[in-house]
Amino acid sequence: MSQYETYSDDSPLASVWLIRIPILLFSGSVLLMLLLVAFVAVFQIQYQGRIFPNVSAYGIDLGGMTEAEAQAALLDAFTQDQDRTFTLRDGEQTWMFTSAELGVRFDPSRSARDAFAVGRGGSMPIANVFDQLMVWLNGESVTPLITYDQTVALDKINRIAESLNRFPTDGAFQIIGTDVVITPGESGRTVAVMTTLERLDNAILNGGGSVIDVAIEETSPTVTNVEEAAARARMALSAPVTLIATDVQGSPLGPWTATVEQIAQLLRISTVRDDATGALSYEVSVNTGAFAPYLEELARGLIVPEENGRFHFNDETHQLELIERAQNGRTLNVAETIASMEDAIFSTNRIVPLAFDYHLPAYHDNVTAAELGITQMVASGTSYFSGSTQSRLTNITVAAARFDGIIIAPGDIFSFNRYVGQITAEEGYVQSAVIFGDRTIQGDGGGVCQVSTTAFRAAFYGGFPIVERYAHSYRVGYYEHGDPEGVGLDAAIFTPDLDFRFLNDTPYHLLIETSIYPERSAIEFRFYSTPTGRQVIKEGPELVDIRPALPTIYEANSEIPLGQERWVDFAAEGAYVEVTRIILDANGNQLDREIFASQYQPWGARVQVNPADSRLG
Image (cartoon, rainbow, N blue to C red; front, top):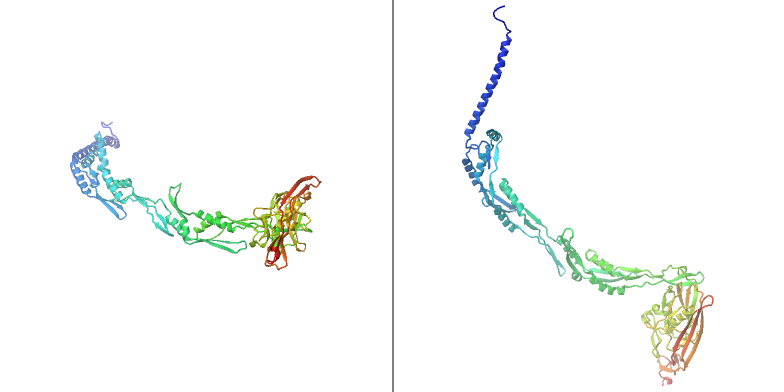
């Protein structure tokens, strides 16, 4: 074996690089570290006493400046900006203020000091180096310490507010005569001082726009509907309002007119507050109640009383036959008419039909006998008027017709005066002899008592309770001569004081028919109803205290030829007379016994003769 060993070619080379690579890496790292330290050292030396790069304030790059240089630069920039103007604007009005006038102040030393402190605030040098690197790469802006006295700005804004503030004014209107005069309302404008101050703060501190809109709060008028209310008032005064009506035949009545001047005096203007919003509004109304007295007076002439149908009883068919149609009654509805007037006053329709309440009669045209319980005649009464003048016969006929066909309800009281009405010439009555005081005179309606006497006799024999009855002052010859009833069964009336009344005490309706029989000089009342079975017995008349008639009295009448005479009244003895009515039931048991007493004064005959007649004395 040789003295030298042999090795493979690769083994020595690999071993060498395994040693060299770590040495090279370590050496490089050390060298890089030395370079970085050197760079940092140079950087720190270069910016010792100076602001690091990429630091700014108030928009100025302060990098590389000393604190004093930065302060000077900032002060110079701010001094220029102190002349910067801020404009407050409201529409076309503007107010311009410089920063100085707004009390803006700047502390450049503080800002320079803050800029210099950037990157030097850490307690460890390595931390400061890192901060300096971040500032260099990203930059940093220092917020300048700019202040201003807000009381100065607030004072400026308050002065502007004094010139702009305007309270709202409500619109108003008034009625002068018949004209409507409007005063327009205006909205209020109030400067929102704090909002405006906030906008100014932002412009000063954050570099906002130099034109700042004054913040305004609009305030609407409290009363909102002036035009609407005025239009309503104008409508009310646009034309008269006319009331119209028709009578029951359809013929026009009126018209009655409320003039514009009258309406103007009744208009009322008031304010109403909305509970939800608090807003006020005008309310235009009309005092239509002022028309009430006039309408109440007018209503009296427009009343139409309801009138029942009138009927005859057909004895063969036992049905009612209509002889006079029923008529609805009506009364003026004042309240509804007033409401319609108010509607018309505030509308274009100025014509107002009067409002009526209509009243249906109790006995319409189609009522039947079965409905009313009318089955047959239950009583009648007759009296005679032989010897009556034509005028007396006329009055008897007119009065009798007032009762023909009327119906008396169960429990109702028949009143002669109610149905006979006014005894006047306008109602068809003529002059004839009537008893007045202690003598017979000519007057409207002489002979009507013949009709009331006949009604009394029918009620007497029907057994109906007599509520009111008066005997005549003296014995009337018509009720005795040729009259089978004799004295004491008469009934005098004198409207409106003396009446004849009886009660329908049955559960059935009572139909009254009247007839005049000229050939017999008789008048008859017939009562139709349902028989109750009661019977009437008449006793008398019994006369006591009879006194002789007074002497005959002759009266001059130039219409009577000489030698002839006209008997106006017959002589009659005075007497106290009693007629007794006994009422029995269907079995003959007495239900009632009643005495009808009459006190008659003695009376002398009255005869009219020619003025030349010797008997005149």
